[in-house]
Image (tube, rainbow, N blue to C red; front, side):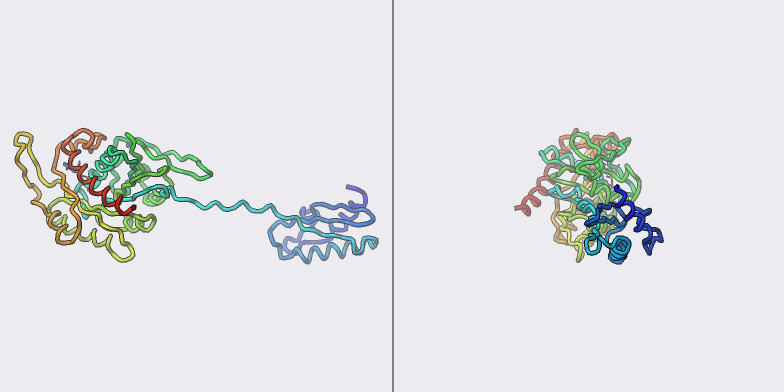
Length: 343
Ligand code: ADP
């Protein structure tokens, strides 16, 4: 800085920013001075964008320098340093964007086998060649970690394209995100939108039993392509199903109910392979489907290995050919319905 420029600087030291009470030199607003006897360029850098005092300070600078250095009159340029343009705000993209079909699995009551059906249906679809994920939204009793043997899984966050994602647990090709990994209701939205699903053909959402906040929050967050309701044949379960179906059909929710699955429909003891015992009554859900005008997707008997499969981390369809057959029929119906609406 030349002697001349230094003298200008000390003159500017007498100008105070009204808001901060500090002079514009020591507070760093005077960023640069280039001057000789012919002209002067003074660059000011205000701390905030569109500082309301900028114009008045610029005028004061011109006036003070003109007064102290009359030879510069009319030759003083006071410029304002342009702020670096703010980086464009990247809009957060939900990780559900690449998912072709989102299915909600619901039930009127707890204990009817909703989670078991979700797990086995997921494996069936995967065996049919689809990429499948499960979002365990049953915040009151998340059971997917146990059903797939990934209880100890601690979700990791990774950064991709400057966005944070949650890595789902993965077992046999099925991706699983469970509230059981977090045990917090607020984690649900995060699991939905931030799990690294990487595009899926099907995302199965295991809802809590009944109707409630979680259902509303899920259908409010993503477009659910279809709801599947699981029920046992008992009359009481059927009544609860009706409530669930009505919820999906309610105005403003409008999730198509793809159909009902009747679980624990009958029992066939190994020693009497041709007998069917209807322990919970016969065809309650099937009948209800007819009276309510809902499709019946199929029934699944009570099978010991279904229960054991839920306990030991391998869904029964993987090991039990008969169970596999029942699920395959159901999955075929679901796929047909959804692929049809795709075209
Ligand atoms: P929900 O998700 O509706 O609460 P679960 O899927 O946890 O129900 O099932 C409740 C219990 O019933 C579990 O112990 C499960 O293993 C068992 N279960 C479900 N479906 C069957 C079936 N078809 N045969 C035998 N046991 C079953």
